[in-house]
Image (cartoon, rainbow, N blue to C red):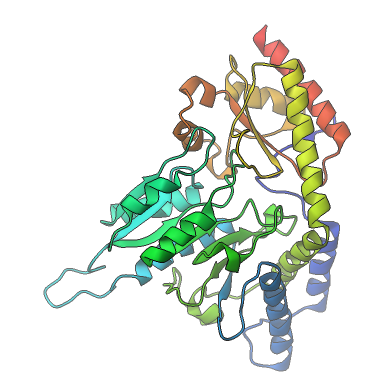
Length: 396
């Protein structure tokens, strides 16, 4: 039985053109881009060319007078950690005064939404353990962050707000521009995790008005192992690692020219096809949901009434156990997930779905299906057929 992969939010296959671009880099045998000799500087030019192309597509101004920063990381998780911990720690004095104990002298407040990815939640909780205050923004029943909850939470102690641009579980788009405007008036930086949005919808870093933004290449048909944190020029950032001068010391370590070139190539290819790509993904998602509803009228599509990413469908199958259904579908050749791949194996019910006010039994029977450019309509139809067959067997 040919497997049908419907877990593109976890990772989506790299484009052949991306693999070819990376292979050329490896065959060229580029030297360390931090080296001062001629072959090192040739590698540096390739690296910076990739950085500039990515920045141009995302409307990031690397040149004067703005001098925003695009910092390559190992992926979205590292970029989110660098944003949360780096911006927070840069906002307080790290050195104790005479008579004080070691460590950070004064903490502050961080605000996140309850629907964030674990790579935002856990660094924020780490700050909480170190004496910081952590507040959360709730979600509406449609999965939209409650923007009206933000102003009363802001204070002189607020050091950072972080709200994702598009939810990784439901696909619901968030009012990040509105939240960024609120934060700007209060003089507070806002970070957004845009991992699921970049490469699906057009994103302008400048127009969003955010202080920092996370992206990851393997979500838009680039290579695994590289992402980036984009940081506005006026935002202070403390490094998480030490031992090198690369990327102004903010993320030391030898950069991979091939990964950066692959990331740039994937984003350039998406940009050329972005309108047709979005239409294709939306059509696949709508076809999938329409057919499921036709034969399973009791299913619930979470966030259906809200603006959503074109590639994501989170569906509850009342009366079934989500984990059992997931395993049965896997045996039937349909790959999907119970939520974020980074939370796979956790017995905790989805915080996002629970925050939407859904009862536990509905949360527990929900699965995420996510689509990519390699999926065909025929595969959607066959996936629905297999899902219907599995559901029928489990009900009986």
